[in-house]
Image 1 (cartoon, rainbow, N blue to C red):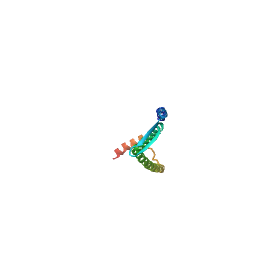
Image 2: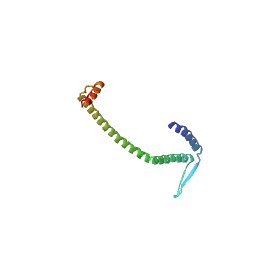
Image 3: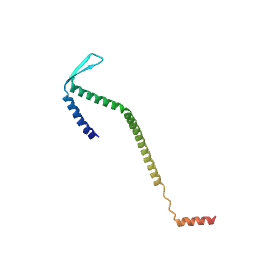
Image 4: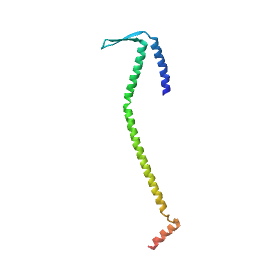
Amino acid sequence: MGFIKALIGLPLAFVVLVFAFVNNDMAVFSLWPTAIEITVSLSVAIIFLLVLGYIIGWFFTWLSHIPLRKALRHQKKQNKKLSKEQEKLAKEVEGLQGNIESLRSGVSPEPKVSLKERLKKAFIGHKAE
């Protein structure tokens, strides 16, 4: 994005500066509600108005991004809160996994009964009743 801005902005700035310095006649500006008159070079006036327009544009752009910055701050707070909650849950899961491992190691495994023995037990058990 910066490359594109430079690609467009630099030639445009060059053209404006050449235009400003070629037009170096004197100009009279009167501030209407008052009787103040200012006589300056036209090139100075052009550059001043260009810089003033840039500053005003930057300011209004900054103002238009206020809701976005507010939402970003809110999102950062939410992320911190969720991160703390995730850490707490991860510690809890770790503790529960440790409990499961200790329960598994404490229980002695029962001897495995083969399928043949289970079937024999099932059929013999029904005949005895």
